[in-house]
Amino acid sequence: MNRIATDPFLPPERLLLGPGPSPVAPEVLAALAHHTIGHLDPAFIRLMDELKGMMQAAFNTTNEATLAVAGPGSVGMDAAVLNLAEPGDKILIARNGVFGMRMSEVASRGGAVVVPVDFEWGKPVDPAVVDAALEANPGVKIVAFVHAETSTGVLSDAGAIAAVAEKHGALTIMDAVTSLGGVPVLVNEWGVDAVYSGTQKCLSCPPGLSPVSFSPRAIAHIKARKTKVLSWFLDVTQVMSYWGGEGARAYHHTAPINSLYGLHEALRRLMIEGLEYSFARHRQAHLHLVDGLAKMGIDFLVDEKYRLPQLNAVLIPAGVNDAAVRSSLLNDHNIEIGAGLGPLAGKVWRIGLMGEGARIQHVDRLLGSLKIVLASQTA
Ligand SMILES: *Cc1c(COP(=O)(O)O)cnc(C)c1O
Image 1: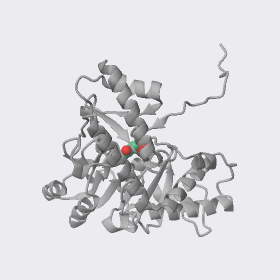
Image 2: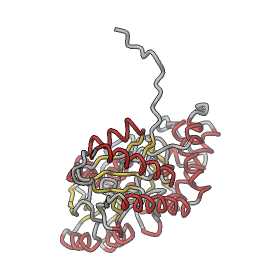
Image 3: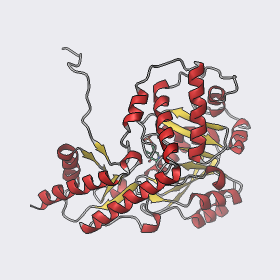
Image 4: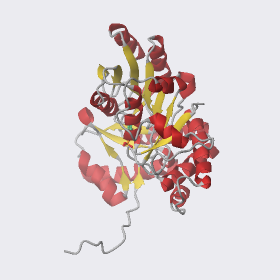
């Protein structure tokens, strides 16, 4: 059997309006195609320094330990949880969707004792409930939560949750995979100790990197660990010897050079646009979608107050075939939207307006196609 592909792979041109990946700008794709250089080349070190500065700006932090972990958002989750939590440590995890559940799995595999605090899917994390759970469970060392739950389209009040953790002397871990670039992420102001994100949501970069940041308090905590970090690759104190700078860079692993070129260009574009302008653009696209869907009689799962502009969980109208609509949008209209997960499977569609996807013309194209597809369903 001939195992050689007859042709180079050419992907179809899709408009990505699902829960990620998001559309990638041509400038970012072009940056990815530059010549590969060595990971200790002085030119590459300069790129890493610039990247670090732009990641700090995006996170609104002065944390020295700010870097891009090689791997998607889930690897950032592993890095945050496995560096902060030692086996036997009590970690409170607020769960209001898929990604809180995943954090529990990461923590328990790492031997931590998980104190779960569950909320209905489609509702935000209630800081008062977290407060009460911390009262009831003395000795919790870490509080972890998801800022923007991509499985439900809900934004939680990160500042209030971090303040509750601080009151009880616990460190905080925040998942900002979907929030970064789409809504404000104020790591220093909120006092978050470990935060991780991903490139393929509102940063509009291909998947494969996870920007992370650790506070000085978190780094001191990691240095004082009694046991080694479970993962050699993700041990942040060691990775920092490569990202740290000031001439002391040592080989740790071979950085994904070209992916970092892409992130550099994506962050540069975000900085040139300005964070506030990016947030406003996400909000405008979201409101345009709300308007258009309302005219079609389609409603949202989440209360207006907690809705994420970049991830819209909309209720599938009665009698409509969920899978057939998504498949027709993809195959006949080249538009990808997401399915509901867990208890929301078959109940909602997840429409992502992330990064480059958050533009009025994309919303209009989706609304037009959705009308055609829904009409053909009821015909
Ligand atoms: C997408 C996502 C992740 C996981 O990121 P991957 O890049 O898919 O590994 C984690 N948390 C949230 C909130 C996400 O939206």
